[in-house]
Image (tube, rainbow, N blue to C red; front, side):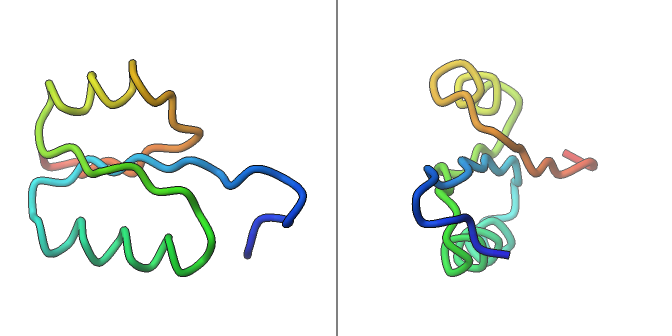
Length: 64
């Protein structure tokens, strides 16, 4: 589902320590029209991303 063109893109954050997986998720979401933030790979990067960028949605690696 693509966001409506007159609305700002939904901003999505990714927290994933496996680079290949994070890159794949980013590419898929960008293709769908979402604004994807640079992935965080650990707790501190994730907290910084949340504070600085205020994403609308975060995809979190539960085993991280």
